[in-house]
Length: 386
Image (cartoon, rainbow, N blue to C red; front, side, top):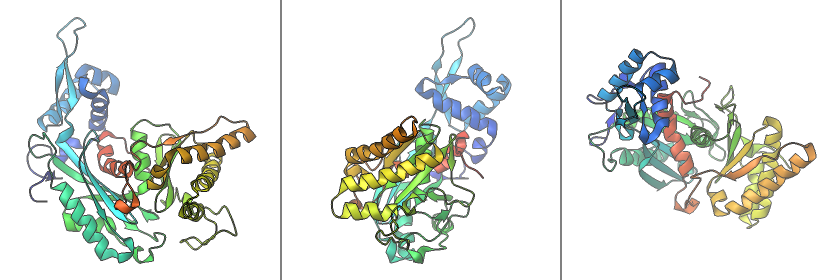
């Protein structure tokens, strides 16, 4: 990535040292939340519990690094008007990568999550690890080398978040037995891409990335993101935190058996939710696919007591109203039987807008969430268990 944004550890401007520390994360998160109007140092001190001197030291370092800028003066309450500070979104950037079974979508986002560039490339996971690495690394290099419109100077390219089908281990960056692609089992995908690109890469499941993005956008404290594309999975946010499970296997909703004598699934079982949904869609029966997905969503709501179901993936995007209607019917029926409040259902913002499998896969909600795997820790907002 010779001519693009400086990578983590580059000289000049923003330094990694400027971004470390719990107190720095508190300040950055509050400044980000204040938007273009900004927030003053006295207010930052009041809301963080830090002294004004400590806040001044942190914000001074961040201003020197180009992450903060003056947003104007606030109205005086009986003294010198305080200067408000705002986030400089373009100072730091990250790549978000959605690796699907039939394509890869790469976006480059700034600190505010605004997408500056994107690239979609068709891909067949069945072609093996070598072709996978070539395609993903090539798309990442192309997007990483670009410049955001209106950027002043070269921003710091902090790293890349990579979202892929599970199961996988986000702690080691290794793929496990992706359904239908046994040849990828044990592939150290994050490390291999880091070596090729010289850029830190973190790996997580596609559904977790999308759920993280929606959690940071202020969705409910307990919700599930259901992604129906070339497969089916769930991302879970419980008590405001992304839940991966102690063995990183949470959210494998697609391979829950709901019909013992059902069709064979790529995982080897019969009657999995994923197999039933895809079989119904293959014959054009969207209503049946939505009914099956609704049954799975109702089971999940009964187990975890979530208050919101978000739907995403290109299969959902092809018939959003039908899926919302079918899933809502199943959840309402459960609420009627149990006497509980109905669970809300809607399509996730940015979920597969204008994206089709034939176009090379990829989901905007997933790719943008993947970028937050890198950016969210700067604000102390990555709800992880590590």
